Amino acid sequence: MKLYRIQVKYKNRYADGMVEADDDKTALECFVKKVDSGEIIEKEGAGFENPDLFFLTFEEVDRDGTAKVNIGETSVGVQVGNASVGTG
Image (cartoon, rainbow, N blue to C red):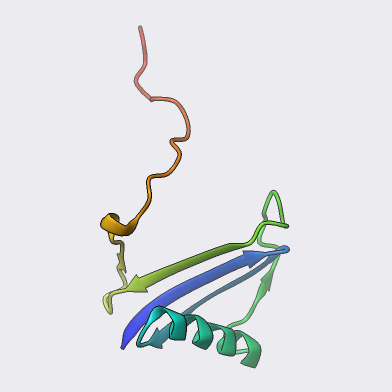
């Protein structure tokens, strides 16, 4: 079994929990069951600028607590901000 950390943020609500499952789909199903049963508690006041946006983060976590990221499957994102090199 794999260990997953799942976080959901929507409508000023936040849920964060760890689940064990054999695959990604089963992990999401387990997360929903844990939220429904009250094992994972939703928190209010997540502090979003736009509460109408839905955020879901999904990570496979090593048993030592570190997250795995497969760069080969990650799409290129938008660069944000300016270069931090000063001129002068």
